[in-house]
Image 1 (tube, one colour):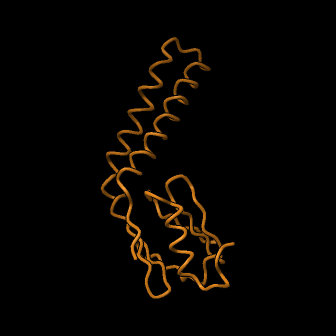
Image 2 (cartoon, one colour):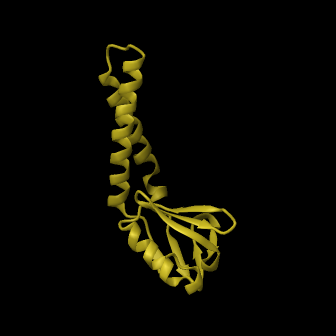
Length: 130
């Protein structure tokens, strides 16, 4: 079973980030007394758009795999299902917290709740979330 990033979720997350960056940029300029507050919106949008374009290929290539009781992710990350303490939804991502306190993100999921349900169903019954 694999958990690949979803392109639509990637764009949705960046649209939200852009809206926040635009508002923050305008607020900072307004607080600083700049008469051209509107440039904060352009700067925030440009920053997030550039970041999104630059990282898109890398982010959309990060696939997680669930097999043989182990969740395997990019860069050699491995989490035994029995070691998962908690699964939680963070926007379009799923956070995997281990019993040792390590945290991993399965980013840009089309349906994070379904991802959580699939991982939780594969865990040992005594370790499943209530």
